[in-house]
Length: 401
Image 1 (cartoon, helix red, strand yellow):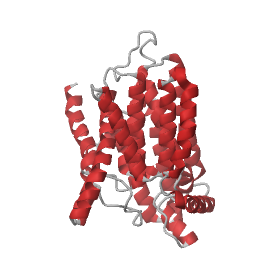
Image 2 (tube, one colour):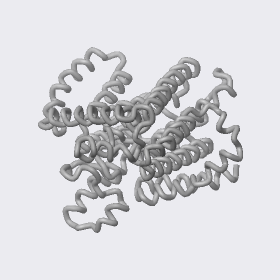
Image 3 (cartoon, one colour):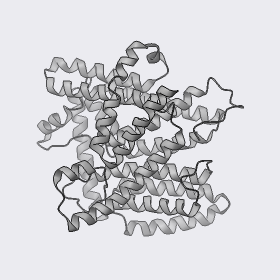
Image 4 (cartoon, helix red, strand yellow):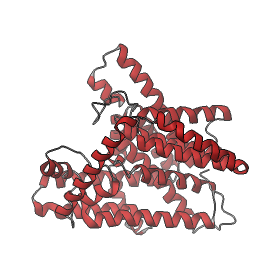
């Protein structure tokens, strides 16, 4: 237990730095995870546990290594290294969530979302009155990547408005699930403040000007409203229909919606063409941009879709492995909900669909901040699953609530 506490404290420090000083936080967490693979080799039975994500990462590493036959050594080496780091981070998250209460991690994720919103407005004001050096903006996460023409979009410390929006949606989903169903560990003791923070997260999502993000946010709000107003659903439906007409007039970047959709469809079509060039082994994760550039003459870092990116990067096996992960997780989540109905399952049933829905139009896994938060949530779900066979459903009360 003492050893766990010693490793837990640096891990929590790394998570806080992930939000405030992203490069330092990412580097620190990678450093903490450096020997996870060695611990796995010393205790190979851990690999035999039900851990499909670890198996999926190993599968992707094997597929990428086979690409050495194509003589693209740089892309293969970088991709294997990236997957090796990903595997270590997953093992670190899996180990750490066994000794950190879920409500603590949940609180951190919500705080992360609030920090992105507040820092986004603060950085915008600072940039109006000061010229911050590039290195400082990079350290604070205020250096915009990939959207030079959209300087007016909020992204806080997440480098990119789409990645920021994904983190904000996860935070909003967790907070609304807590407020609509109650918790022995509320975010704050004052309900009005909690609802004010919901509004702040919604403002942050709107200011990222992500159209997909706004649609998901509206869906989350509708579900929560129906949950809270079960006896007034006709009135709520009428209000929501009237509200949807107003939303279209304030929809972010509505004038360029058609153009953006056409651009996204073009990227998806070209990404599928990249996949067809190497359908069995893919072109590797870091080889995607080069192949896309050779095909179209345009630099695009990823496919703007999780499944398409995995298919293009790792071939049919990579895409099939991802589909298996999604279907398996959905099946287990449904099964455990019908058997146990523990409060924690509601959080996973909210956040996992958010991640998948947002991944339909963007590849947010390219952000280390988003990736680590997703690994944390999956690790908590993995820990929750490990408890089920041991404790009877009638006697079980989740220690993570």
